Picture 1 (cartoon, each protein chain N blue to C red):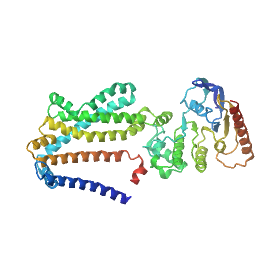
Picture 2 (picture 1 turned 120 degrees about the vertical axis):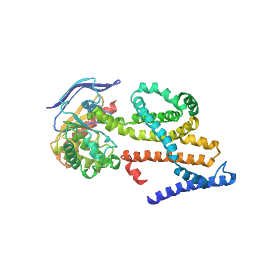
Picture 3 (picture 1 turned 30 degrees about the vertical axis):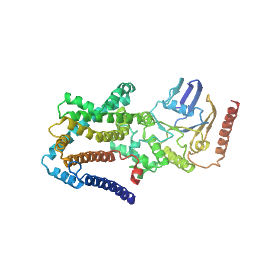
Picture 4 (picture 1 turned 180 degrees about the vertical axis):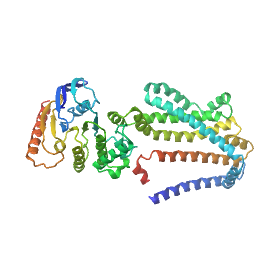
Length: 258
Length: 244
């Protein structure tokens, strides 16, 4: 088991090293900071950014937008997901809405949102539109996947409706909610940053990336990209960690062997 | 009070499962309903349990204090521990301490005290079925229904589960109605065996066994006789089958 983990870590590291090497080769080939700065120079910029007094405002605002967008999508997704999962009619009625939201290009909505909303709320709006369908669909799927035999068992033993919801339905859909939240978060950060690039609010990673691009500070653009990736990664880890805490019952034996 | 089913009628589409079917079950005993597959025995159990409704007929004595059901697959909640699954059916109006005391006793009875904190995915099939048995006794019911709870388990496991069940039942004698197609299971566990025919179901034999359920002395002359009666009754069924 231990050697397996070591191998996995090794392969992960090898992949990162390969990416850095390719980057280095390309940077050496172009030999211009205006096209592609070297990894070392970019990492130095990242470190410098961390010590910049404005950093916390810029990154913090983007993170706050992400969290607000996520919370709204989460609540709405849970609500509509439960409705669609429990009522067939509502599901049929609601499906076209979801399909529309999912298939309209982000850019198109952004252009409209720029007219409708203040620059600061455009990214949040875009994030909600991209995250909500994921959470909603997952909650619906989760409710539908609840084993009817378990429901029959609980009703046979005359378990109260409240306990049926909290002890049978809810735990059954938690893994689906978490997986929906995880996909939503992954795509949500990208939506937030696209929104910021286009709407140019006062603070935001997207705002600063656009600014730096204008001044051809390519190292800063890449540095902010790396920071965005780190933020996304940290939140993904947070969600996975909470899954591990909450869904302890699932395939315990299997996960112990991994 | 004797449990009575009289003039039961049930059709599925155009198939008559029960036509004026009547049955009496003695309370406080383990009654086995034995029959070939597709003879309507599970339907009968589900009608008794209120899961399926009959087209017509009368049932007396089944509504007392509720029922427990031991399903063919254990139907445990995967997100609850062994203890959680047992306590799931204990009604809400007792104190947590009493609840724990109650589940502790049941865990001991099925030999799973050391596994109270385990999740179903960490248990073997036989252990899961033991949890399901403990859960049936945890619920304060008068009647326990069992639908082939030993199907698919190997002989050793069957015998061990029958042993756990019998021990638990000895300390808490409820009316048990048990459905199976396996003569050995019926003889090992039941006080009374009712043999059903093919559809529409009729009672082919009603045998009483005067012995301690779970004892495994197969040479007992009464057992040998009972087995012969059942085999004869089932033998008539195979004849019945050929005619059709």
